[in-house]
Length: 179
Length: 177
Image (cartoon, rainbow over all chains, first blue to last red; front, side, top):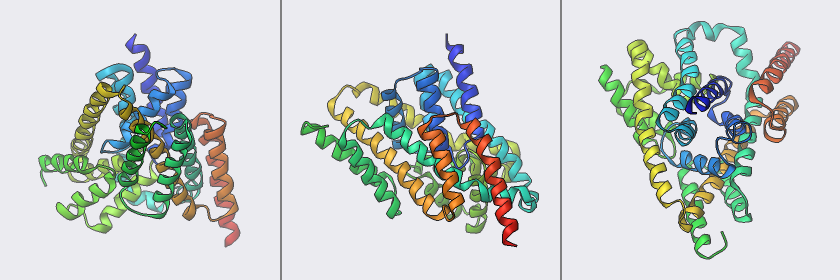
């Protein structure tokens, strides 16, 4: 039944979004864990394809959750997944935006702002590892990932450029019969 | 600025967002529409970054609320997400039609691998500036191991690690004085 999927999905996306410090990337391992390992809504390959599509499409990176919702439960899944991802942090933003002046003088705020970034770095690298393991099965994939990673690390151009190059290389390699 | 302008402004941000919605948001909000100054924009985006969730979604909420209260926030969010979601569904539908084609299979695999690399690159870039002490490296390694290698849940991991990270910050802060 659909509601058997919608409720756990809403709950998972909601709580995960609430704890996604440092951005949506921090959500990816948890979403992968629940969608592929715990609830088995999709396979590793389907997750990797959804991840790829959500990265190519324009827009905020909440789109991965939107697409998973759409894949798993159609239109209602799309709406539930998107709302569950956006609502908790937007509510927090609303409060933070209105209380910004007070927030900036609060000591706990300054402390948290200073102490969480190292954890965020770890979370983002963990996201990279989880997506890499879902998406990469050949040496060419490793090479493409490393190439894009180096390009992103050293240059500030639009990431769609190295991503397009990677896709082009992948297609050519596929035509030549080794991807 | 009217509510309609707010909605269509963010609709534009969503449309321009190919490959980097942050740049598109800055372009529309600061340069084209001049809703905020550079400083004002940086401040709002900074707040959006500290909060959990997508910094752009957070920023959009705050900007919408600033100009038109709760309704403004809702309209701005709708504007921001509407086009990207429609494009995404369109892309996914086209993809499903051609998913069995060898070229599309290769392209998808390559895009997913490249996108994983993109996140690695972002993490590396961030780490270069943030990991400036042994403690910082230790906490990054701990969260990476817990989530990436042991595949433990996010909420529990953060509830365990964050208090320690804050405590160490406090301790180091008081030692420096």
